Length: 101
Image (cartoon, rainbow, N blue to C red; front, side, top):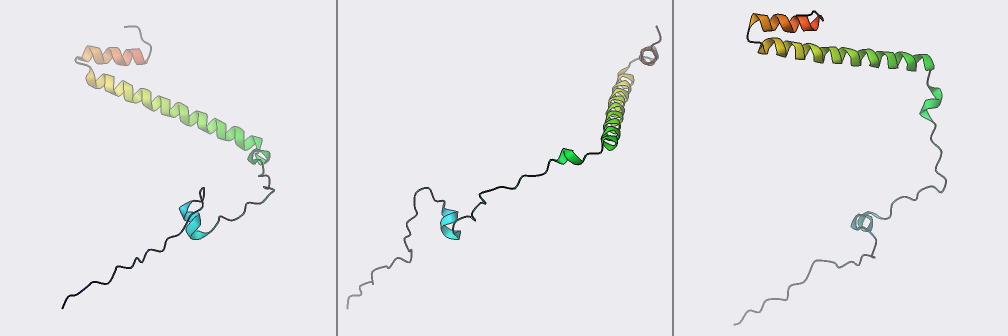
């Protein structure tokens, strides 16, 4: 007795996608409609207190100068560390205080 296999049936349902429509929007539906009039966002600079802005700018300036000073200290330390003799170390320290050596 000869056994013949039943023809395979495809479980894939073919769907047609309109050109220009993304697959995600095809699966989940169209995106929500955007309003025709977009409300104007408030200007964040309208409510800025000038005194607070000046204080903030001053603080940023001070922090920046402190960071510069820390960079100078790090550079000074590295120069001292790389100096070979006590005289070189003295010259580096003297240069820091603007002494003529």
